[in-house]
Image 1 (spheres, rainbow, N blue to C red):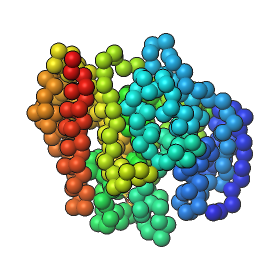
Image 2: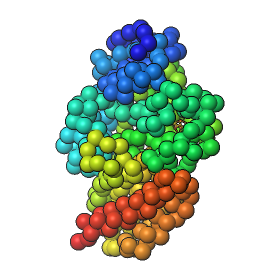
Image 3: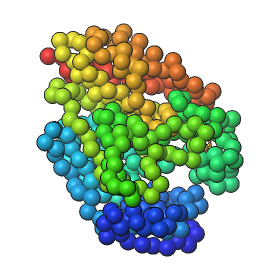
Image 4: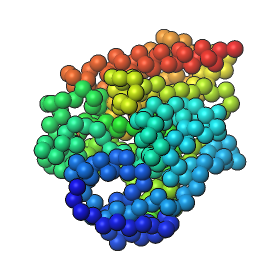
Length: 330
Ligand code: SF4
């Protein structure tokens, strides 16, 4: 690991000021991803700005029915919150599907949002990689791509976003709160993450030097059923090959609302807007579920190695929607 300076910020404004003063600095929260990447030589900040002593707030119920969660809340605490488990089971299940208990005890909400891809070439500094070293090439496209993207990839990068929590947040239409030198801002999770395009080195649209202060999750209507499903190579402590955050609201056999977000298949949590549009207002029947996911996956561009993900995701979506519709049945 290369030498770096250490600063501790007393509050969010001080953290933003320190990041502005040190353009190569990184904020340090739980450090569960950042420190690993520093040890590998992938991340090379000249300064770590410790934000662990900052009071970003806890888990607060909002008057409108949603919740606001401070960036420093640990993943274990968020998953174990009664409010989250009752209001947003999909979010609690997504967090518990990720990492291990020990990692979840350390990992913060803000840091979880910023975890980086686990593409093998990205973490191997002996290999070229457009995300780590822009313009050096993408060996994954003709190389090992089994875990990589089938949706929204570019000729520059086919990496996948590896997290679980943000996939649930996408389905819940949540937003990210952050502080910049210009003040407080809020951005929808679906806008926060980006596709690689020709700038794969950028994972998110978070402005440089901004500090994430929390997330806001709006309420779901009464009667919505939600869940998180993860298909992976082993039962625990493994990243998802394909994951699904799903929420379904049925009244009288008709789908009033549906939310579908996929993980492990794109550079960002993939909100399945085509499938959702086809399903809203339609009968809750397996044929409709199949037609909707087929329409969504018509835009998939898998590699030879990861073509299996298309069929796997299709089965995951159809099976989950069937299960949720049976739960919702009177
Ligand atoms: Fe790097 Fe992206 Fe290519 Fe992986 S897929 S080697 S992260 S450019």
